Length: 473
Image 1 (cartoon, rainbow, N blue to C red):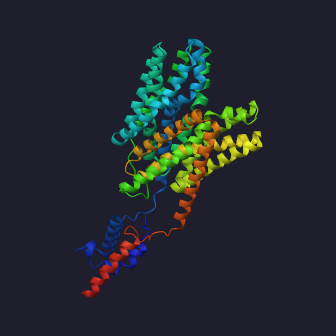
Image 2: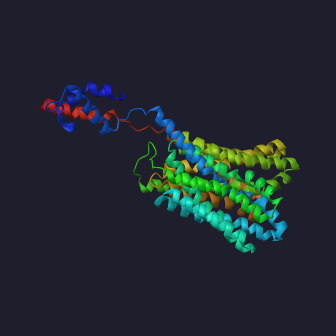
Image 3: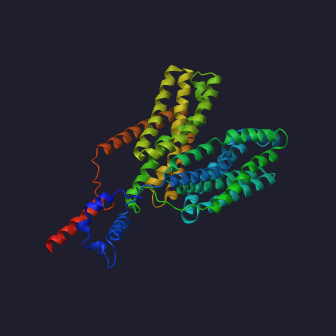
């Protein structure tokens, strides 16, 4: 295969042949074509001038990417059962007579343990292979589900199933799955990671009908165990597949191998601040969408349509956020996501005056898109801001997203939904304005010179030095 910089090497052949960094141009008994080939090979090796890859390599990488993605789908369906609790809890309450307060507490225990588990998962992925961490998450889910279903105490069931199976297992699974995708598909990590997070979000649409189908024939324990087994068995088979072909760490293209600690820390802190500025608005709307539909004068069908719109837009936004983060810079991705969030707040203001079903559905859809894209862009954002330890940075981002998601309903319960939407909507507008200004300033800033050692400049400087030496001689 012909190197792209070979004409440049040919023009400067006479200057390079007098020795210098590349030694003697022709050894004793070596022909001139062999010497020319050796010099070209040395320049390619020293200056990392690589030729275009073969098409077969790209096809092979794409097959490996899809293989890893398919193997990780059962884990997203498994730990995404936390969203199915709204359809599972009424059946449990009807058969056991447990109080609604205890069932609500079971649901709140899962996010409470998810935050420290995600942080621990990011640290473990940074030290151990992600396949091992994923196996540990699978074992937590299996052990927690079996222990919870075998106990007749509601508190024991809450600790084992809600905390260990879904909380600890889900917290360990998310960073491990994202790290596997990042290693297998470094160029398309945002797309595949966003698709995985979308599957995690849509797990309830599959798990709830499956649980209800089993519950019509057997007790709730059998139905929950059968639903969990439907995802555990494919997950165990996928673990064997992932263990058979461990992924090799690949550094992101265009990223420096070493980053300054200070700028990286400031970038992480800035991104976490943006998450706390825009995410609570969407989580508060998620929790109070039914009350908003009644308060704005919309009918029951509008409330149902708004709930379906915000749920569908949430999954779509997760995938879309991952896709855009692969093609846009972090500042441009933030600007697009905050633009959606600001549009959702403006749509809420318009709906408060118009009180039309169409405006309410548009407001719900924009809120779901903004909320979903905020979490869908996190894997690619962590890979760019934390090149040294992307798994640890992603765990920080995901943990901050989880805490910001709780801030919205908590503030709404204390101050009211109207005040909460006004406060966090205003923060979203301010964050969008600041991000737009920073994006415009970065576009107007002059680009640095591309004359680097890895490009033709390094070869040209060496040729110039050799010419100076030959003229001096």
